[in-house]
Length: 328
View 1 (cartoon, rainbow, N blue to C red):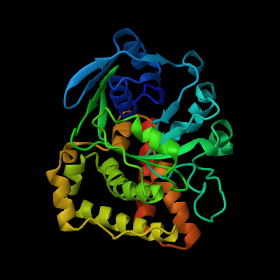
View 2: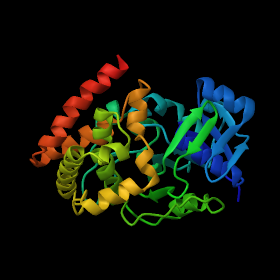
View 3: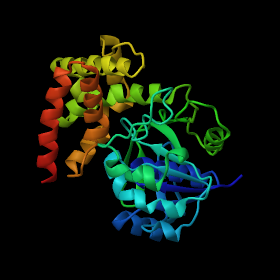
View 4: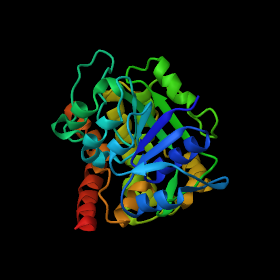
C-alpha cells in the first residue's frame, strides 16, 4: 500500500532512500534547500547505482508545504538536528513515527534503555529541542550501511550497490507493529531493512568502524583503503577500536576488538576501500562534522565510567582543531 513518506535531510543517504521509495510507488517528499532543491523541482531526483533512473518527488524547504506524513525519515547529520527540529512538526500526524537514520550515538540513546533512567544528552540535543518538538515516543532507530555521494544538485550516486543495509529498531528492542510497517515500506526495493534484535548493539557496531576509520581518514585526507594500507594508521585505528569496545562494555554491550590482519585485508578488497568516509567528505567541503555524535559522546561515556582512552583523546583533540580550521 502506498504511503506518504518524507525525508528530512535530502543529502546522499536521504536521496538514495527517496529514490528507492518513490520508485516503489510511495508518495515521497523531501525537505531540501538551495541548488539541490531547485534541481529536484525542475528535473526530479536522479539516482545512479545498479541502474540509473529519475523519479519525480515533491520537495520544499518548508515542511508546511508537504503536510502530514505516514512516516518521516531524518537522514540529516547529527550536528544539524537542532536546526531542523522545528521544521518537523508540520509533517506529523498523531501516530507518525520518526526514523532517525544517523551515524554515531543518537540523541535518544537512554530512552527505554532497559531499566536505566531517561537522561538527555546535551551535546546531541541542546536544550532538549528535538525531544520537545518531535517527542521520544515517535522515535525509531536506524543504522545505515550504505555509501553514497551527491555528484551534482539533484543527482545521488550509490558507491557500493552490493552493500545497502538499513537496520531498524525500537528503542526498547520490541518487534512492534509500527517498526514492522516501516520495514515493509521497502518490500519492493532492493534495500535490506531488517528489524534489529538490539538497536544499540547495531548502533555501536557501526560506531566501532566509524570511530576507528573516520578520524584517521580525516586527519590524513586518505580514503579508507589508503589509510588501512598504512601500518601505522592501522595501529591507531586498532587502538581506538579497542578503547571503543571497552566503552561499549560500560553500556552493557559486548564486542570483540577488531582490526586484525584478516579484517583489514577484507576492507582493502572491498569497494569501500576507494571511498572517503562521509565525515571526510564534509570536512573537505568545509561543513561541520559529526564530532560529537561519533567521538565526543563516546569519550563522555568513557570518562563517566572511569575508562582511559588515550588514543581517542588524542584523535579528538587533533580532529577538533582540524574541523575548526576547515570551517573557519
